[in-house]
Amino acid sequence: MRRPYRAPAKNLRIAERAFRVRKNRVKGIAMENVISFEELDLISGEVLPERTVMGIVATPFNNPGGDGAGAASSSSAAATGGGVFAPAPSDHGTTALSACQAIDHQGTPGLLGSLGLGSQNPAGGVTCVPAAISSH
Amino acid sequence: MSLPSAPRTGRTGGPSLVAGTELVGEFEGSGYREPPQLVCRPDGQLVRLPALLYQLVRSLERHTVEDRNDEPVTERVAADLSRETGRCFTADHITFLIDRKLAPLGVTTRADGSPPPPQTRSDPFLAFRFRLAVLPEHLTWFLSGLFAWLFRPVLVILGVCAFLAGETWLLTTQDTAAALRSVFSSPALILLVIGLAIASCAFHELGHGAACRYGGVRPGAMGCGIYLVWPAFYTDITNSYRLSRAGRIRADLGGVYFNALFAVGLLGCYALTGFQPLLVAILSVNLEIIQQLLPTLRFDGYYIVADLVGIPDLFKYIAPILRRVLLRRRDEDGLLDALKRRPQLVVACWVLFLIPTLALQLGLVAVNLPQLLQSDWRRAGVLLAHADGAVALAAAWLQILLLALPLAGLALALGRPGWLLLRAGWRRLRLRVSSRR
Image (cartoon, rainbow over all chains, first blue to last red):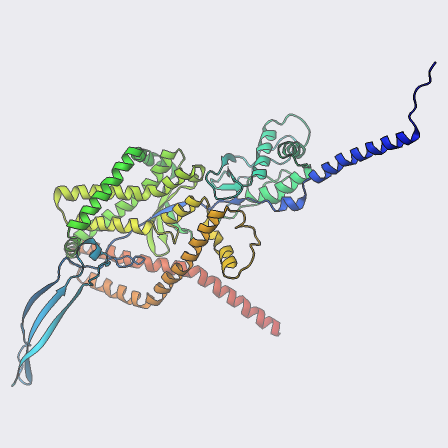
């Protein structure tokens, strides 16, 4: 009857060592695969801000945030009117008679001028020149 | 605002989602390197979560619903996450994430099943604070549904073309300045123009709501208030985060589109009647459109830029951008590194454009404030002095209100930081006095 084969002790030791290495390698991989609390601490979410879309009431009469709006201007420059103006006579003193002319320079035409974006700015005024002086 | 304190707990009394929490899905078209996921809280606020936390929430919901065995929920969730991610998770990791990351956001209970901490209302920079809801959500839903059909592509193209053609005709042929003169000379016409401007504004808000309806999400409440120095209407379209990038941009542009349609209507009326004050009303609508498209404050233009780059809150990146560009410091928070390259560049350009613009606007307001007060006071006096008759008086008071509202808004806007500064100064003074003793 043949005796069962027994591996030499040396071969057994090599086999056991190989098994232990394979076991530790698997264990090493598993240990590397465990997530850490440091990694988890880097993760975060956030509450998104609410979206409230707005409509601003803007008119040409008053627009504190707008630039150039609300300028009243018209489509053409015109010199309007003219005349002689004199104060009411009094008992004493000096009366001056003046010739006056009202100028209304009305700036760039159209919507662009209305928005104050035109190259010609609107302007107006009254210019008076003394014509005669009388003393009484 | 605190969340409901009745969580959906299983038999073990472990963690669960807060009752009413909804898993929405991916935030589409985002500017983040890792696509974020969205969860809707019971109070309607949307929460952005990274993929891992979203997987945890999904697993938690599944195991809370299917709670049939006695194994702790955290261990089952850990097993799910390990399988899905290929990394090893334990129950301790899940407890850590729930207690430190999810419960503070109000998405889940704590790991022991107790209610989450109370949530404070978010207060983003330059948010619309001083407001009042006028139309509730269900009424906004109904009214928006009446106009949602206007967003069909063919109608949008036709509407925009009609608007552009009408504006070109107006700019090149019509005498708006004469129309302005005629309106200024009549209080009744002033009232008419202001009324049309307010109607245009309200229609603008319906545009946002209708765009949300067309996209398939629910618009929130509508109301009015003061935004910084402007009287304003608003619509809550927080649910538009659920839409794709195109849907969000459509919701943002919906208001301006409805302004354009309103202008087309006014142009049609003017073409039929020749009634000059309508030109002034169209001018007002144009001013509204221009102002809304500015990207500096939280107008529609800001949301358009934010949605183009896929970043919900651009103001959050002001400090990191300034630190990196001006102080040459690294991004310690990791806020900028979480963004893709192109959105980083766009946000940086936006911040560098915004800061000087805001500084200039605020500087102009501060410098002109005394003159503004004086001229407004004088103008109010002139308006009241020349108001003869009920209509003229009503027009005068309406104009005075429009003059006073910006000053009230300025007082409110400066009041809070001013109060905080005063309080900080007082505290410092008390500390100095107590340290000397």
